[in-house]
Image (cartoon, rainbow, N blue to C red; front, side, top):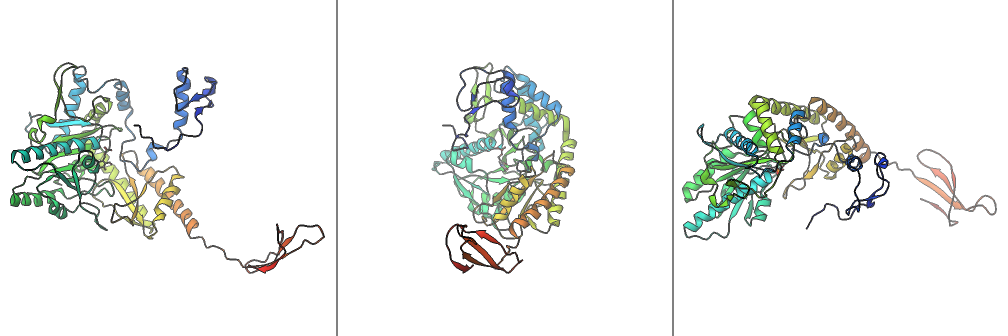
Length: 496
Ligand SMILES: Cc1ncc(COP(=O)(O)O)c(C=O)c1O
């Protein structure tokens, strides 16, 4: 089954000719079925290009963490390698080598305990979602193996989390034990999480960089509390860190913060290469602490494409460009470059936070430490304001999502601006000036006093025989216009 986002097809079912394409196509081209004949490449390009103009502008899309700008040299590398299927590792050994270098670079950035010569364990994925599923599967299998060896039941696995592993839990039949968030505290409380752990818990999943507010969860406290519980109970519950956004921020901005493999219970970490890894959409990474944390039976060995190739991914074929682009960024930027980019993002976030705060209209709910984003809500407790405001900003081209917080906090509606590398100071200042204009417009929409004018009117016949009946305003308490207007029916006198 193919899921489409629209319930009904667009009204026009074929392209008639657009301005440019009319030079090349005369007949309508169907949109929802295959055309009977070919059209020229110029026409095909122009038709699609023109239609895409109606999409939002990616650089003004402040909803997304995903990279929308890369250097032209990297764009060129990506185009040059678009025809390489990543899975043909024997045919493209250099591409495979570049992915291995990326895995090792990231693992070491996350302080994996390896000596210089040892290879790290990890894999490139299409994003953090696939990476989380792979990490979750490894935990589930490891837990099942241990329970089986102990002669204990292994049919009721659960995972403890604040958010974000819902998909894994549902697809791979693992009970989700969610730590509820509460007003003013929008990340998982480590104490509550550890309380929820039982013998069937395959892992606790912490988040470095909440999707809602950008805040980092306290992985160190979680590690300490869980170590104590493991000691008390004899269990061996590990931690996974979903560092989708924070994984490429914390090492550069907060090197002292312990959230990664420095903590003994952290067995795997995922990160999105296409977020603060600074690559276009389509790349993520999952790294394991050691070989022992990735059960061997999950690894597929294929040899029909050449030599033996171990793989652990949910899909098979995929493009190589994103992995090559990730390596380009590592090589090009180095630690210094990434730190500069992240510092600039934080600077823009600060300008935005202060500007929004200065309007006096918003509560800022994101923290200063974390992912460079600003999440804010209207001080007025009207849930609809954020949605109206989001629509008003859209008129200036900005895409700023408004959303309600998860269950138990659904009375708070939040707006969120994610700062990416290409959102510099100039855009931040422009955005703030549009915020002020949109606020004025919002106020005029919702606060404009509704004029109350009291009219005394008289219904009656027209002045001459055969004229339309008239309604005559005989008194108006605001202003003073005396006006006669035609009445469509009735010959009554009255006041309203
Ligand atoms: C914390 C967190 N985990 C996972 C994801 C999913 O990431 P991806 O888009 O790389 O699959 C997101 C997306 O924003 C996220 O914020």
